Image 1 (tube, rainbow, N blue to C red):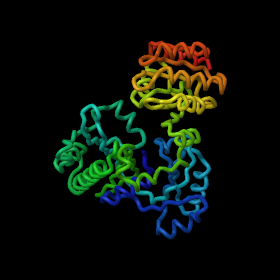
Image 2 (tube, rainbow, N blue to C red):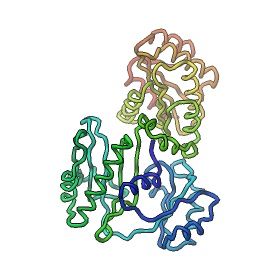
Image 3 (cartoon, rainbow, N blue to C red):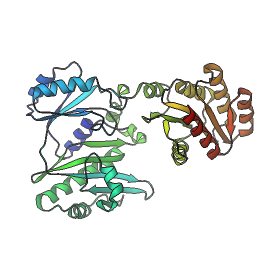
Length: 380
């Protein structure tokens, strides 16, 4: 679960990370009164609170020279979707004059099976592109999960960024706080970008925390932060049905798989074969026909999906059960979008017979299935 920016900042601020002074406003609030009540001094920054990246490029961050401009900006942001999401809250902060933007994060490196501290002098909205063009500018420091992040490791990263004196001590403190948050929350990612150099101090201008869903049961307070209203309509509908679904903000192939790994691998294959996925939908292991029918029903009217690809490797999941669900969905919804199915594993032959009777294309080779789904998406 990705926390909103203001939630991440509340957590990091509690661990000693300097953040700008700010206030959260909701629709219907007297924005000017809340700004004055918080004692904020212009210039201000008004930020849409939605759990997606690239808000600045999407118009979700507005600079305001005065309180009146901030009120006007907040009203505009409440009515402006960012990547399909309308905010329920807007964060108003004091703008911080700074001379340099750094990047700092603690992330789980699944291949290395340990956390990694990542830092760069190339912070800001284009840090990912900058890293591709200049990978040498990225500093990576593996962390021993038994010892945790040690101060000397953080200082060494800060020295590599060219920091000295108070800035170096501040960087060490921020890095240790980020690691503490990562470890305590069971996070997948704790990120500050940009981490601004403002005189002789560092300030976290933006923050992101992604908590592993499996760790949420250990943090009931965080579980309450999941706000259905901050998901797209389709995502909220899927959550009510217990189906993990993520809209990817682009047109292409709706990818349905059994298990997150299978679904993600299928999306990678779609990209590799020249297409792009529009939706991630995981029906899970051992899915029933009713669950499959409900999943396809969700996608039947999805405008951004030009074709639907169902990729199933049957183990616990029975391919004939999945096929019955698909056949039932086709009978219920017709064929509003081209549908391609790949079945392999448990009861795959019987599954293919069921699909043939329903008039649905079925493949055993995943690459052939992906190629067909990409082709149909282009035609659509």
